[in-house]
Length: 134
Image 1 (cartoon, rainbow, N blue to C red):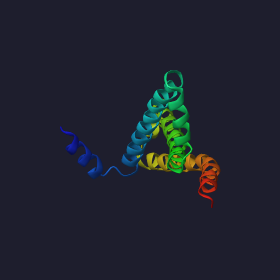
Image 2: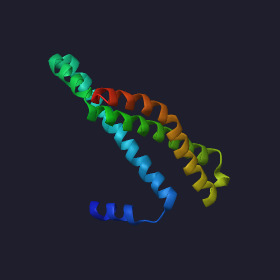
Image 3: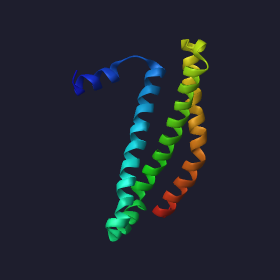
Image 4: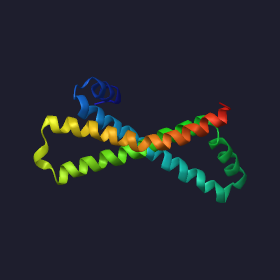
C-alpha cells in the first residue's frame, strides 16, 4: 500500500469519535516528537555555535513561534490525557469496550484536555497580544 492510499483511507474511514481520537493522538504525538528533535538539535548549538543559539532564541520570541508553542502545549496535554485514557481502558476497564462508553470517554478526554490547556493558552495568548502591541 502506498502513502496516497493510506492517507485517503485514513480520511475516508468512518470511525467517528474513535477515528478522530486516533488521528489527533497520532498528530499530537508527531508534533511533540518533532519539537523534541528540533529542541535537542537546537540546544546542541549552545556548545558548538553559541552565536547561532542566541539567534535561535531571538527567533523563538517571534509571534509565529509563540503561537506554535500554544499548540505544542495543547499537543502535550491532549496526548498525555488520551494516552492515560487508553491505558486505563486497556488495563483496568476492559469490560467497558462498548461503543457508548468509548464515545463518552473520547469526548471527556477532549474536554479535560481543553480545560487543562485553557489557562496556559490564556497566559501565552496574552503574551502574543502584548508582542503584537494589542
